[in-house]
Length: 145
Image (cartoon, rainbow, N blue to C red; front, side, top):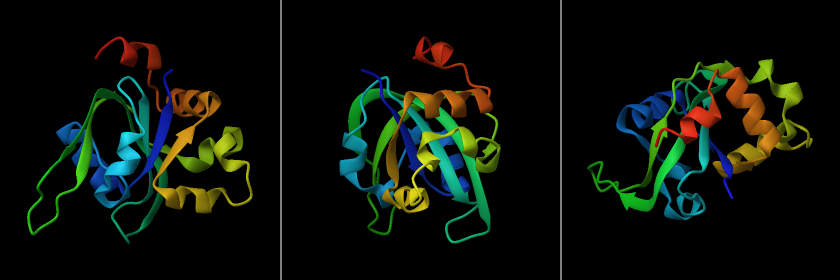
């Protein structure tokens, strides 16, 4: 079964992932990445432009997990985070406020705290709403590994 996931990362880090074809969440921890499987859909939500920077609150990238491998990547200075390979689709950035009222994610009163987990499973409704807003055809993304 294909699952959709929401990763919470600053936009500047999202762009690094899109450029490099990878996903990295939760400050590079391995366990969240192990929850994802080949073919799962992955979308980034960026609360800020840069880590601890100006607020953004937008969905910034959407793609598909390419394989079942979780791998380490040495970024230098002793930081070796874990990553997943992702094929990203062409997606437009979408402010949360434009779709917030249609998302199951935003129904609980404490939904903002849920985002602090860093990787959240999404409902079929939510990934459909987000993908449509970002102009991403999920069927085309799945058929183009």
